[in-house]
Length: 455
Image (cartoon, rainbow, N blue to C red; front, side, top):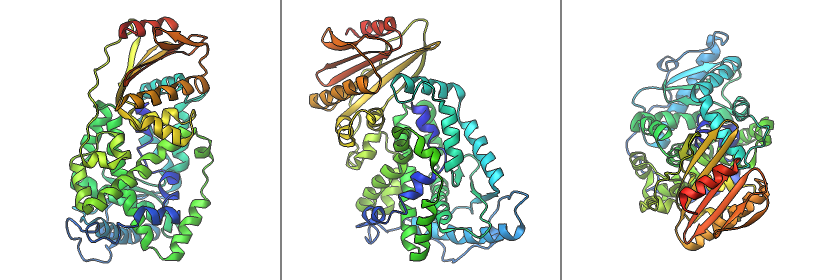
């Protein structure tokens, strides 16, 4: 599942990024008490006192179909936004960012090319099998197609961390208010990338981390840019803000709306929860505090969901590594769901409040996922902060197992609960403040994992 969560974080998503920003009630509640604070707006450096950048100062390329006049106009407008981003974020660009302007066909091709390059087919196949085992995808769902269709519909622009360029679609009639919001968001990424060079650590977490740590880092990165886009939105004239809201309302979101609820929530996580996370840091320590957070990235989604845990440097509970294995099977993934991943897992089984309650006691967790042909199996151990937390999660998993996964014939087995009525086979056990969850399409594999864990 960590690979899918990574894939959903590559580019800017219109619905997740902008729709909430154009909601006036969200804007006032998210920025109240921080934008007017002198501590919150204290900058760590001074932007140059310019009002615009000349078009020829901004390097980059354009699609051949774009006229020089349109490209020139867009670069001049982006030059103003560059300085707006500098002033608001309190950081100067170390070099003027490269701006690539593409027509719609070239933009779509660039999105698909970059997405395909970042998505390993083996990783997606593994995630698809895990998500189907857990009941989060239907048997006929094609995860790769879902992601590609989603990005084809939703991407509004992006900052490429590898090539250091901002890629935007052409605006024939000038940059619209909605596009301005998106561009400012991406310019903040370019700014923070130049100053804090966070991509190496982020890529390390993606490749070598546990999944939860990469999601936590992304929440800071996107939350920072989202916070600044809120400030930009507030600086707009009422007419421009209204026009941006109208653009969002007219945006085609058929693909997004058809996606599973957990997937829609996961798309919004780094923007929405990241915004709250950054907002609390702003209230506590201003922009310098946000700058410092890039030097000590959050390490768990628990820290993002409860910023106080980040501010007091609360670490995950110690948890023994899993050593269980299935001879003849491939261990396809070893990772951590984290507090946010558990919320996603339980989305379809419980009410939103119950989901939050069941996941809130997260202390730590780890899982191993195995595959053999069409068969799959997961063994997952969870450490609650208290025994009550483990009991809450155990009860939630029972609901998920029966209502979402469709497991049947639940019965007591050596102190745990075994569902052996047919695929999937599931075993759940709570021991004090710990929970063990095993699910498999092969009953022999499930029993082998139980035996190795002594349950």
